[in-house]
Image 1 (cartoon, rainbow, N blue to C red):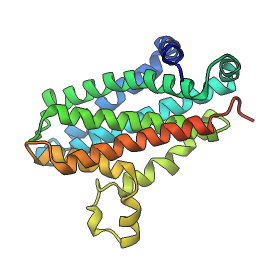
Image 2 (cartoon, rainbow, N blue to C red; image 1 turned 180 degrees about the vertical axis):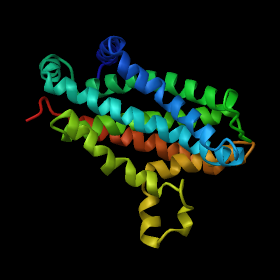
Image 3 (cartoon, rainbow, N blue to C red; image 1 turned 135 degrees about the vertical axis):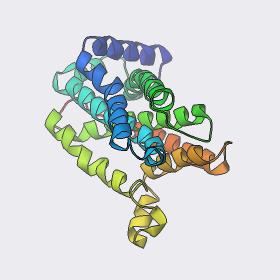
Image 4 (cartoon, rainbow, N blue to C red; image 1 turned 90 degrees about the vertical axis):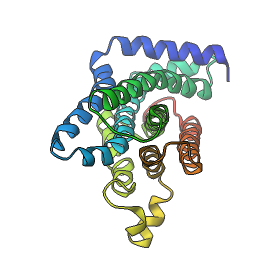
Length: 245
């Protein structure tokens, strides 16, 4: 891998995104709008919003980054751009790292915006540090980016890329502990939830919600989410193809 090639790839992706206002709006504004909607759905029960708002602050960015990254990467392949890039002295690792860096930069902006609005506009009440909340939101967005890069290798069209969402995201959403405590689930479902990264993202958010300091459980949860993102990025580089059949 070359740092110069990775940075050049990231700069090219960001230049392309600059000319795609709809994708930028989807990444930056949709999580905020969903949080605003959620806040007023529970307008008469602010404690309910506090209870699930922190978790969704991590889940919404993960979902949007997954969609944008998978579709954008697939578009590169179907247009022939990926094939031309890989014909140059550019390794798969450089390409994946460049995409991760570009979308990671967008994830930073997205997480800052969503966390700021949730805390200082919508009044989300957390006991812990807002910076820890931001950290988990950012790790979730990076995990969504990594998952999007990975699944794009198995899709032949943008429609198929979207179809991966029910297979990759929805099971994690149902089993992450947002709707029911994981230790109250059937043993098989609890065992599955224990290997899904979104479960640890929600656990990390809950640690910030209920503890004033950084707990050992928070460090474990954040480390697992970050490790899963790195693992999926490595798998994405290994499965990257030059073109879509």
